[in-house]
Each structure stands twice: as C-alpha cells, then as structure tokens.
Amino acid sequence: METAYFDCPYLHGEVELTAEREQHIARRHPDLLPEYRQQITDTLLEPDQVRRSARFQNARLFTRWFDTIRRGKFVVVVVITDSGEAERHWIITAYMARKLSKGEVEWQKS
Picture 1 (cartoon, rainbow, N blue to C red):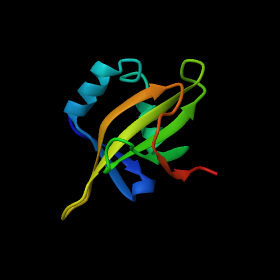
Picture 2 (cartoon, one colour):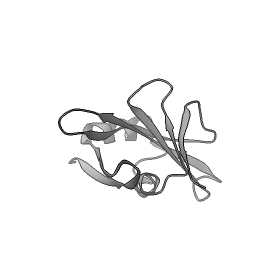
Picture 3 (cartoon, one colour):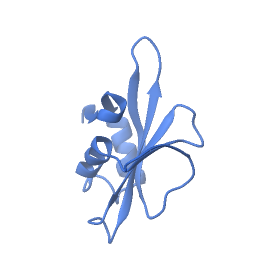
Picture 4 (spheres, rainbow, N blue to C red):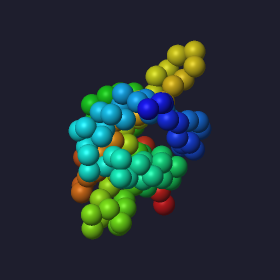
C-alpha cells in the first residue's frame, strides 16, 4: 500500500491518505473500507458540509450524505492541516454516521 492522494477543491489542493492511516480506517471502520473508498473521494470532491473539529483546532470534518449506503449514511472524512513551509492536508480518519456530531459549520452546500 502506498500513500494515496485525493483532489479537494475546498482546500485548493490534494489530501493525502497514508498507508498507515488507511489501515487504521479499515481496522477501526471496516464498514467503510475497502468497500466505500470511492465515497471518500466523492466526499472530498463535493462535500455537503465542512465543519471545524470541536476536538482539534487544525482539523476539518468533510461530510456527505449517501442514500446508497445502508439505507442512508453520512461519510465523514477528518482532515488535518499542518501549516508550515509547505502546507500539508492529510486524512487522520474516516467513518460512517447516521447523525453528525458537534463542530462549527465552516461551509454548507446551498
């Protein structure tokens, strides 16, 4: 497994998913990976909502509703942004949810 890169227009760049993080998601959230990997791509490309994490200042939660997943579920992709000389965006985790948790809404699809 190698690092994968996903386009994310909202962040004006790419988001990386390291092999270690992908294994973490597959282990902790086997309902999501590997079967719904395309939905992670779709969520980063066209989210329904982007929220600031209530737990981590440099994290955003990208969410998108999919009617096609188990009678309807949100896919939530948590992206960390490391600021520095070269800004880096990377996925720390991803999961499915029936409801969304806390976090300040930064952007909402109209």
